[in-house]
Amino acid sequence: MKIYSFKNSTFSIFSMVFLLWIFNNPIIAGTPDLVITGMSVSPLDQYASNSVTVTVTVKNQGDGPTTGDEWVSIFFNLEDMPTTSDNEGNWGEVGHLEPGNSVNVPISNNYYSDFGVSEYGIFNIHAYVDFDGWVDESNEDNNTYGPIQVSWIQDPAVDNYNWPIDPDNAPHVLSAVPNEPRQTTRMHKGIDIPKVEDTPVYSVSSGKVRDRETEGDDAFLQTKGTQFGYDDCFEYYHIKDHEYAADSWVCQSGKQIAKVRDYHDNGSADDHLHFNDYTMHGDPVEGGTYYPTNPIRTFGLTYTGDSNSPVIDQYYLRVQKDGTSDKISVDKIKGKVDFIIAAQDIISYNKRMGVAKICFQIDNGDWHENVILDGDRVFNDGASTFLYCYDCTDEFSNVPYNDDGKFLFYITNNITDPTGDFHGYFDSADLEDGQHTLTVEVTDYAGYTDTATFNIIVENSASMEEVKK
Ligand SMILES: [Zn+2]
Image (tube, rainbow, N blue to C red; front, side, top):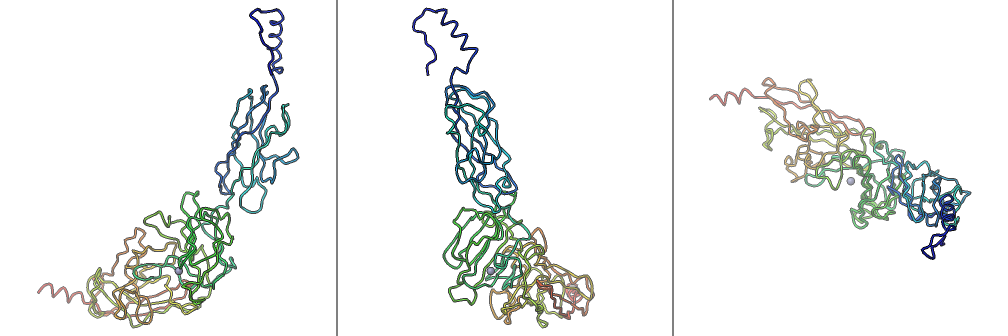
């Protein structure tokens, strides 16, 4: 609208008066019309303990300025555009806007709890400028915007999560534990939960589906959190019928994510869910040296079904010259040596399982606890050659167990060294020559033990005399 014009160059008294009148009454210049031209939410995916910032772009597309009292409000989890009868969420101040001008209004500290919902998931945010109707606008029906969708995600689990199998809060039976040898010098990094095909698999935590392989034996899924200062991740193997696409969020624990598949396509004989926990110790894919976490550590999952003690082979003791595979007779021990014993844990399904702890003593002296396997950490593949003896059996080659299935453990190597220097030995020079007693105690994950005693004969002075000659 044109307010005035000068039709010729001559200033009239009328024109002067009119101009003065305009300067004292600017409202005559026109009427504002507030609209929202854009809105963004940062971040779009957020954990429940954090907040998001909503930035609303407000424009005055009218031909008069606003007075400066305007607000823009946001609304949480509405189905439709907000109306004046909806409950306003948070708001920000728009301020004075000349005709044609825009302003970005940040509204921060918006939390999951603002949304008044009981589940985590994807929810709408709408905006409404001048919700209270304080500004007289040329159009009052163009003040809303939205929705933008924000994903609210349950904070990821680290400890005390539930089972990925129903019932999720009661113990299940296992058919394999962490740190058992697999094939040549590979370690089992998780737990095996024997369940038949089509058993539903549930998420133990929120997480983003990072990798998704739907075909074959190793069909698996990783859910991975990214915002807590560490790379937490859970892996579910030998599954099918994935419920979530790659890069989508599993917004909370307890959601069905897949089903157990027919492992090896041979019926139900060996179906199981293999479950890995990578919380606390790093990234399972991007990191070069990493350790998963033991899912059945003290603050992890509790399993059931193991009421049998582990078993030590009372007749198997191998002594080797430290750092070599050279066998030494148990009645001619000298210098630094490694002791190797054979043991296993039997649980249900008649499966051979790894043990949780091995310690030994000489002549009722101090216990040496060099082998502890049920702590937080699962060992990387390199540790396998320090824990299991692959050269110690005549029956098989490159497998660390004897002909009745007992694992062959080095009990003198220091598998507990936090720096990863697992090399260790027993120095027989600390003993008098003659007969001594080696007592070995093995503990399984359920706390049952077995003990075996071996007679050894130390002959260090004999070797010394040989050197003197
Ligand atoms: Zn497994």
